[in-house]
Image (cartoon, rainbow over all chains, first blue to last red; front, side, top):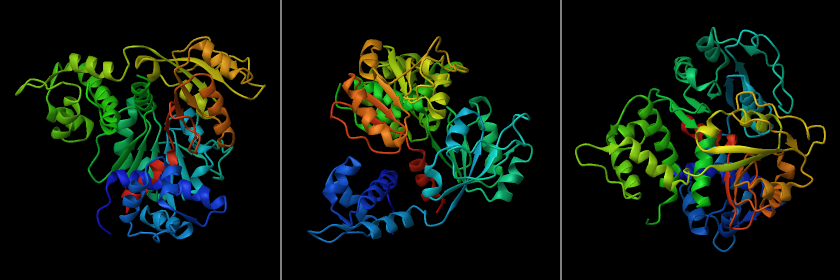
Length: 211
Length: 211
């Protein structure tokens, strides 16, 4: 497979989400125009993005929904389950834990950590979640615990003040991907991939468009 | 000002965040290389992005931190306060409400809404937040309330099942920008700008990079 641009990678999950909905509504085939409307781009962009996957569709007909979904899932590595831990069990960590969408998209929450001794050892509130029987772990043995649990991705929801230090421990625990909700830029070795979620940044972008 | 590409707009808040930290650490001048390292891009990209603002820095010296911050804030429209409402006061809405970063970045939370009659009329939990005296409003008069409050941006944190319907009411209430946490693509008039936050999408992108 040739090198896929980051922008295309960023759109693939959105295609997948739209295709899932299309399939649930009984659609078997979509063309690039339909897909572009669902995704909010244009048909040329859709054809270009999908061509990176070697998927050219059938001229005049379109793409088979099931096989396109399988192909995107394969490229994104979603055919294997990913093991996810939430580090920082405050309100944000708790609300993420309750998110139904994880499991159906191949992400299993296998661990929850918090530095607060009052939280450690307590059962996590799993309302809305499909995870079962999770107990909040202390951070005392974070590195070892992450290794033992075989965690692929950490969702980091600690306060900003400790995020860098905790992230370094997460990396030391062998985790190579971090979704960072703490509002600062983590400095980690190049082999650790970090994606930042910062609501203020999103609001500032919206603010620009308000004029 | 010439047309600024979306990708540049998306990076401006990140520059701003890094510049704020640099200033807090006593830095008065930064060059494009330093800035690129902070932001995680390259110096050529920084110079290109900032050239859209008409900001060329001083050759061999760099950019004045304060004036660059002022310029970016101006472009992003952050010099005026934005009035924000959270619609959907579940765990996610609650955790966003507690986010300290809003006010210091020019976003005032002025309203909280929830469809649950048991929540309406109750004081919102403002731990961690700088907002004061907010009471959860019912959704009975959402459109009128949004207009009356002068809301610029809505953070939508309702369940996915009702998000489209609620978003239409938000648009009918005169709001032109929505930050959507519900995991579906909203269909709204073109003059309403929507930005989606979907943790699953972020996890899928990370998953790709795990290989």
